[in-house]
Length: 500
Picture 1 (cartoon, one colour):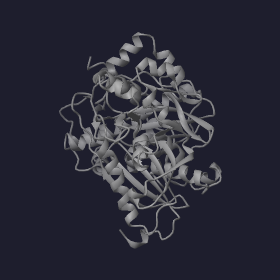
Picture 2 (spheres, helix red, strand yellow; picture 1 turned 180 degrees about the vertical axis):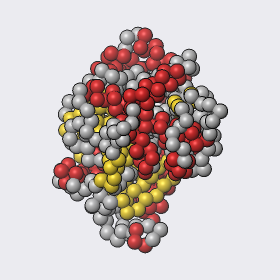
Picture 3 (tube, helix red, strand yellow; picture 1 turned 90 degrees about the vertical axis):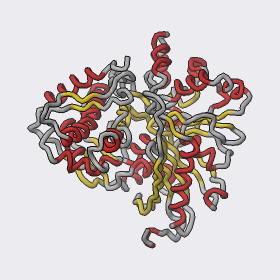
Picture 4 (cartoon, helix red, strand yellow; picture 1 turned 90 degrees about the horizontal axis):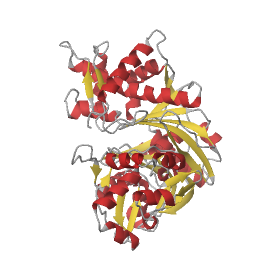
């Protein structure tokens, strides 16, 4: 790295962005600019159909290694650290030794589909949705915990003895970074466990009883901004405040400065996640979207409406790693652009089921509409189209829930740099797509939350002035969107229920 990336003063913030495919660490200055970064990849394992696991120690090691690499290039420690993380991924560890007790069950994992089905048959979904804003789906942490306790009879007595900690990835990182002193979870991550009511944010005894989860394993819920702890100096060579925490999609909404009700962002990562700022009251969805926290700053809570797509950038990874149709993710754009359309091919990437608005854990991937003329470029283009079309399904549900059209959508994440995909998104959704100057808004949002806690910015208005747009993609007014979306929905319907 160039010497210009060194920061001689303690005048920057660090953001640890622990994602599904790896950990990115950013150095952010007072102008909201990213001036240095480090990255470590992270492996997922797929031991059975629908199972997705990671090694908890590897999760932390990737975060620590990337953080140390970046800090080695600076001349002083940061003023503070913000943490953002893959949500719903579920970990259990020994309170005394910090030893993981099982593989981390990743948010994409579908092993608890039968548990969810049983709970629905018992009539539990109405209570779950009313208190948590969530639907009964294997996506969330609660049924993952129920499965863990059901699979290992030794866990329950050990938990009752106070020797086990549960956490999502933010909890795990903070526990390790503080040398085991802090067992906490921020309000946005707690809202994704299916164990907490969201108004106001708090653990719920009825939900804990429903899923057989002992209260003794739970972390303390803290705000996204307005709380802080300190790192163990033995880990980073200094005591640094941990001052901002949020699940990745909430951090991205914050990093996109979507502070006004009705503003929308989509993050294109491993999955695609659409969030709409819903203001100070939890929204209620009639179209299978989720009501969740946007963030909690001190005692003030902001809520969001969310739609989750499980296969976004992961679809491009599949085209690369499983089919070998492209050499790297960036090649998807020129290969897809080499043909004018997909030649009638439609790819439904339901490899781990479907998220919003279909919520079908038994759906499986399909490629439909192929002919003898179908070539690799058509399949690659159909893969990019599938990402945009899944987001369109969520946007349609979101507009139906709010009763008003969405003015524009702000975009971020790794795949947001793909100009062809962003133009597809504008064309298929019929709305302007705005890409910011900083597309790493997940990490940026964590840094901004930390800076808000530390007094770097006095309020949200000051943070809004930092946000800059880089490019706007305007929709094609001549495209027959209705026919395109109808064909897509026909394909989706054929993929549903397949694993049954």
